[in-house]
Length: 625
Image (cartoon, rainbow, N blue to C red; front, side, top):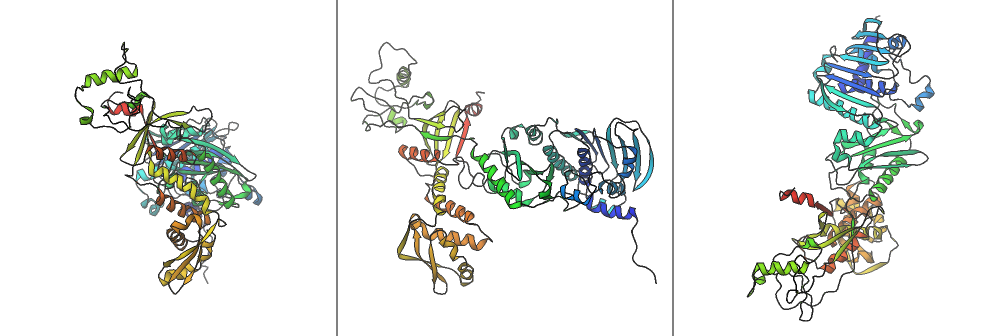
């Protein structure tokens, strides 16, 4: 009887292992760069030909290897990183499996030159897992490894390679994340002798960010740090106005290892909730340092996926620290009004205002006359109104200049006195080191935007978004108190649902009680609302419908998420709409309430509330700069 089971030879097993460890050129680059970092290299040069398909060369100035160690390194499961089974529980190096070099050598043509600085340098040439040449070689301390014709003996893998640009993008993505994880290491990437990426290795993560994303992004990244008994977190997060269309710009680093973890990325994005519009995501670099006992990196051969022993605690900690940092940012200041000056009744005569210039901190909207010294209304007359009998533009210009003190006339112009300054808007900046910012309210644009200015430029405030934020922060605490005052409805509210949907809703009725609503079944397809919180009495029906719809559309919906959904719905419904004009008293009240908000910069949907256009930007439009 013949034996059907046999032991594979080492060459065949290495080729199979290579299928898991080395998926594409980026995988080979990853393994070689990780070895260089583990060897304490401070400078790593990666040179590619044809995006690594034809050649990958990695040169480092690390500790290097002796001839004996260099030869052993190409044997399967040969490693210097772990020695006992207890070391697996406390892995602190990037590599540890001892599979990378033999797997790469099994499917390519490899040449290695290395020296530890003490012994004679060494050169070894391996092709398809077979040693071709080995000999002494003069080389400075460090390692140079060259991988040629990757997958030359596995045509099936080579056939499914993507385009050159796609392969290069994977390599660049890995190296940029590694550079963020190790800013003390100078990393250079070239492809076909052209520079692709380079970092200085000056230990400044923000400098690395500028090399990856550009200077404009780097200057809008904000550092943060936090720690407790289990975790230490440091990193950079983008200001809310800097966003991207995907989550791929969130870089997670655990003990110096770039990783992928969907739950942690989602936590980072959740921290920006109400700061960003829908389907927009931040740029972030999150460094997590923790005891190796709390993380398992031995999950996948690529070592990109990890598992945490205290993942929920870590998610909560990350969320808290990022939100704390975001609340401390002042990318658009919070506005407050000074006490307004009472206005006198509107006079009956017409006011010329052809050349009104609000930039002078003086307003032609507030004329006083010798007849009773009454203020003129802020109503802007039309050109036909301004020009009356005996009126001329030249006379008006002269009168305006004298009022502003531009022309030193021997006698004041008849029927005018010096113009009163407009109402001043003082912007309170939380940072005590920053001076307060003064704004001068101009008016309303298209019934939707409030306009203000100062010497820096023009400020536009979305009145609907501003009121949404005010209402949201008023409603959110109310939804968290089920013990708030309640009222029994004289006419109960009836809600009708299809029978199939009502079956699912029945299980969620107790959740409504947590918000202060008493709802019960009424017939075969209806619900009846008998009691509501006082604050929700006018909007009880849409609030309950929103809560129920959220509950039946998702699993394990938390009270916090329900509060979010209902608060956003209520704030949007109660806010003033576009094309709705408001008077100056209402403007003052709105902005005063906005400045008291915990987060006065974006509405609950993540849209900006205040936009600034600098004086320089305006001058460029008019070709003055």
